[in-house]
Length: 119
Image (cartoon, one colour):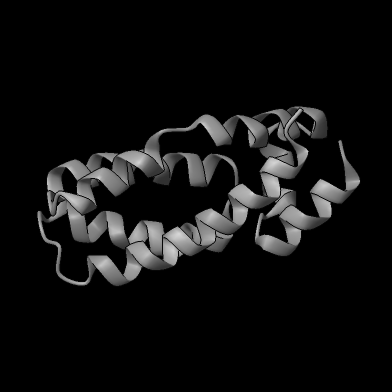
């Protein structure tokens, strides 16, 4: 595990103890899955739905992102993703844009960290 990457992820808001436990203490495996997040389509699916003003489409992406956020202990955006998922689940977009923008900022910051360590 790249220690600089680990420090940056923790500073960003990854719950390291949680994600390490999920991967049975294997930090190299954590690193591989974090890098794989760069190819995850859930955020782009959420974005597509938000741009179309389609709550159902946005929900599908957000729900997938919720799962990934939980599995990788991405706590910095977890609460916003959970709240946006519930807004969209109801078929509503009311209050969705504000949450989406906060998720987008967190997501962009995380992607910048991960890109530095991509092999």
